Image 1 (cartoon, rainbow, N blue to C red):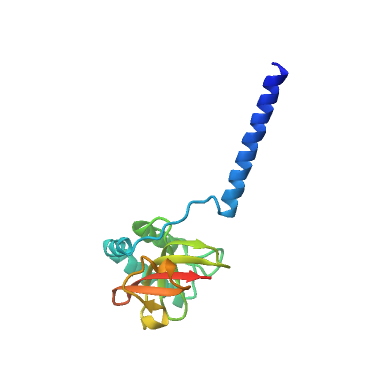
Image 2: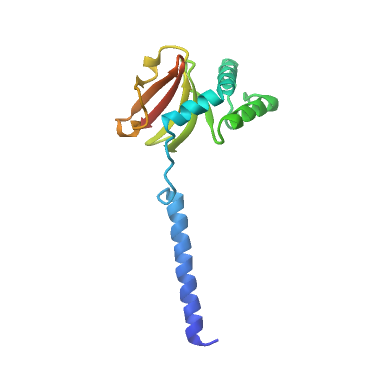
Amino acid sequence: MNRYSLGLKLASGAVLGFVVLAAVALWLTGRGAPRVMEPKDQELIATFYAHRQAFEQLQEMVTEDARRGWYLAGNDPRKPDQPRRDEYKNLISQIHPGLQVAMTGPTGAVRFIFAGEGVAVGPGWVKGIEYVPGDYEREGVLLPDLDKAASLPAHVYMREIEPRWLIFYQRDE
């Protein structure tokens, strides 16, 4: 092997290493990650009607478990036992892979988060379906269409599917 081919291999290896490191750095900072697409209102409405029974059962379970002081997240000793967690997983998998389910506070609203971007401490958005047992006005601003809600000021916006069941879009700054 001559010096020229050895130098060429070293230079090629260095360039390849730099490209790999740059790609990893971009991925870790989120700049190279593909943008998460917001689901369209009609997709969420169709999903709701196709899996209505699972939505209703999950809403009842979350509400019941919250009354008991149970939470699904982390290593909380108050989380439900394994059969109950398996029931959650089964129902969630029937609706949408990666679906997140959460109770949003003392009003009893239950959120089914389908997509979002951002972190817990900073700007971001989430969109999904929400069960609201009481007054919708306490939860957000009602609009007839949320497909362009990303262009609106940061807030919670809602669109009624039917009484107590809504599509929500929340953007924080």
